[in-house]
Length: 442
Image (tube, rainbow, N blue to C red; front, top):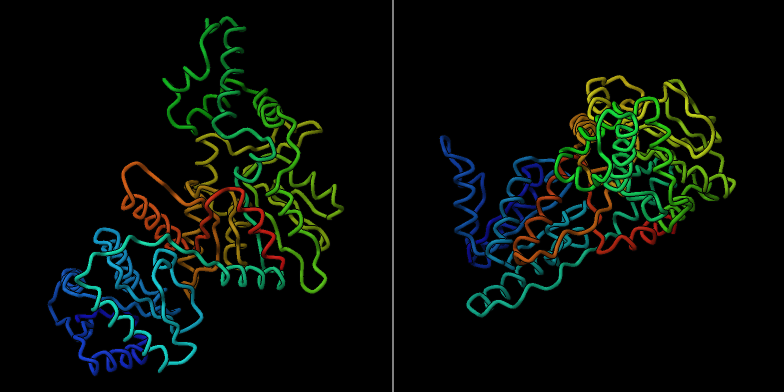
């Protein structure tokens, strides 16, 4: 059998031992350092090696997960696996690193429990593959996901006082805060009514949803229209729209509050970063007698006994008067201002936490261009290039186009997150988020 072995050259010792065992068992092995010559087109040769191989051994370690070239090999193999439905992919773990989730559907071999036993497992797997090679392929089993290692690392970070929760809109929606789309529609309706009342335009009878669908365009551009035309009423109208349903709490917020309690056998949660304007987290922290400080402007600081809650897009608490100079990142111009100012307090806070802590992202879609830039900067400046952060995300699919499309979407999102330094924790349903957060405390 022709076997392709992918590895970082810093793992050459393990690779040589595996290759030696494979060749002794009669297998033909493809290694890049052996087959690539001066002047070769590296990617063309790599693809040639992959296409001509019957089985693939991927040596996974902290070194391979940092290597752009090895990750390219992983990606090529994963895409080939999606298109051809191969089952002869064998991830081989040589240290305590996590197997990338897009490879988690394959049974992996753990050499950390014993080299000889691990090599026996590899040879046995190849032998079984050879026997079933000409038989009709069985349907791919349901993808398995095991996040015990991720939970262990998050728990350790919490106990060491190095865990930051980063919260997006998905955290508050279950409590009654309107979705982004509903928020825009509500404000658009207010704006159209205000323009009609001022006799500037005759918009009575024109539906906000109809207008939004036909002329809305980008949500950020629409946000700019709203901010410009609502003028001094914008912040108060936005606040009214946020709390119109009388939101209070939900399972996700309750789990976050539990995680925020000071620990008996460890340090407290380091901080919360939220992209939401609402005060639901603060209200629930207060109700549970957890000392905290909402920080939403430059120069604001918390005491050492207070959990900082950073509102990096602005803060609109339910009560009290809204200052005229309150900055809310809601529209295109505000996003641009945040993007071009690398020394803004919100950018510095996020970079600091991304560089110094382990961050768990909850309720975020990862489409915010400024957040993506900060993740990329933090990852590029990370000397180990290790994936220190975690993103909880609902698994894509199913689609009407078939399993290959679903698997491709899964793979591409995983790849994108990994390149930003994020481990993905896939969930089947949003109801899985709260139990997952609580498991960090166990």
